[in-house]
Image (cartoon, rainbow, N blue to C red; front, side, top):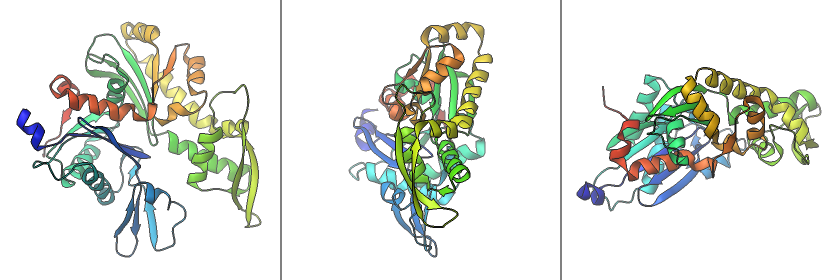
Length: 342
């Protein structure tokens, strides 16, 4: 392997609906950017990718579109995704390497064969030599440092932007998994709808995200928070301000959170009894951006009567998992799915 190491550079990609993170072997996490591409509508020319494109969301003139090419954790717009992946690979792989990189890409566990092919083709066209797919909950478990190769069971809940993945892992495999396409984006959407319905106030996606991060919660807090929200009055058509409390935001989020909690409950019901006792001992690990929602762990604890722990730095668990796989490729080969051209 020695010669290959100097000639090529392996990279791990957590291709997320909201953010894409890239890990380069021997360097760590080198890129963390929003999965957004801004294009000129008439020509299809790419104007910006990542943070610069996200800032344009909801603010673009008619001739420019800010697109999120991934929907619910999978590729919705093939061409744009390819440009996104190619741009990120180019940014991190320096030309000093003679060979194209090996790429490990994380995908949701509920992904179809067609969707897998879209991910693989995008990465190959973007300049990957070999593409390996790694299921997100498995990557998160490895990233957190769970002993995935052992027979004892671990349960991971990874709440991202587009999907929530609940998986029980043992012996290098996913024993059962529930993948639902309800996660962070859905939470933003319910906040938008709530303000529209109850206060005739129209806000954009970025504002909804901001509200969720500032005062969103899944469980009553000791000290409730509030913030000023600016938007457009749907009746008068003029900009208006509104003071919003965390109690109202929690009310807005309740349905989305209930769906995720219900999925966790179903996953526990399907878990073999031997593994269920392991989970009782170890608890559930919460990862992904959703883990940052205040009180989410408390709410899950209340519903399942199991210990629930938030992973350290939950946003990077998945990409750190790809990193560990790259650093010790031969050991982790069992958890990877090699993508071949059919």
